[in-house]
Length: 225
Image (cartoon, rainbow, N blue to C red):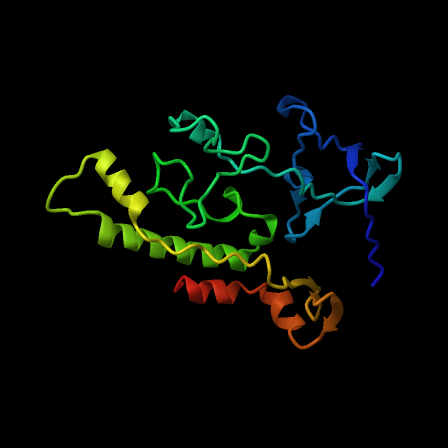
């Protein structure tokens, strides 16, 4: 289909200045913010040139900067920690350290769960489908805390509540790191490329549905919307 994939390269600059000098070294903003939309609803883009770390120059009409993301977890730094050896947030990745049950590792906050991109599970757990499973597991854990840990007829001190939550039996989230992960990429409205068991194959059967709806209908059913 004429698609060229360039590996082991990183874009360092553009004549459209996608780098944000006020945000620190290496920070970037999406060039989508500078796109004008015409009266016909189509994007109005203009040619630009990207420069890679090796000096390669790539001419393009539109560049979407989609790397270097970091979870917005800095607000957790305001919370006191029970141990200096295990911080609430990993300083290198910005991800929240969690137990196998998806509860925060810090004993002060057993009532807080972290799911999805923000937690410290491996990258293989960042697929959207896995995030949904994590949400279901966290909900089950919260129900256990409500049903077994809290006696609403007698007011519990924060320390007693935290101790009860720590002793509650919450099943560990079964990570899918040992299962084969398949990636599906839509190629227009009628075709898709899938990887499964290290085999790539094209599909014209499901490509139309994924390419036109991007599985939005599945999310709508899940949310009863």
